[in-house]
Length: 218
Image (cartoon, rainbow, N blue to C red; front, side, top):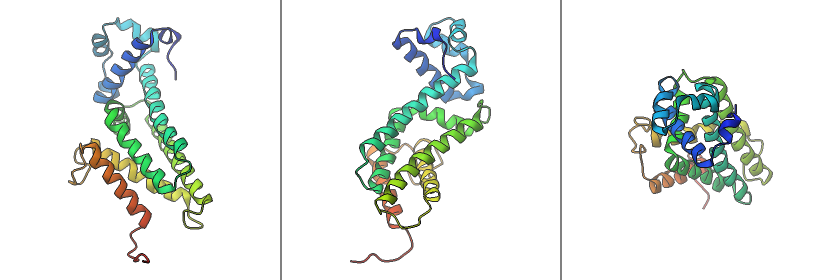
């Protein structure tokens, strides 16, 4: 769903302000709790303008969600395209670090994602979550397929199962940085960036080595 041409004709700065305020409102209050009246008061525009730009509240929500997800995809594309010559574990760590940077640099967008994940009143929630999980899975699967071609992983490994595991670990880790009580008391919630990156590196190292208790050859 895209905005109407009346919105696209606005100056870029005004479009950015409207988008940012809407992301903040939906992210902090959820779809049902979000108020068009509150948004237009913050923006200093007429309420009718929102309907001219997006049709209705649902149109506004879907527009800002799509904008937010494009920003996430930009982060991941940069990692994928700039790390093609690196081994799978370096690429996984860079992916996790990109996630940390996104959560830290765009907390309102990440809050919107969390709202969608846990707020059942969100319109098209099932379709949105299904699409997000598939995109994440396909991204990780592509990294794993590259690694298999370079013989960096065990032969006959099930890349779909590994991608599922990695997606679960990464998603839970980023949630724990932003949501209280999700970190099992490990101190991840609101951890500073440097420590979060260290944790990411160590998680990837655990994945690389496995936990089967077999000693490495010296």
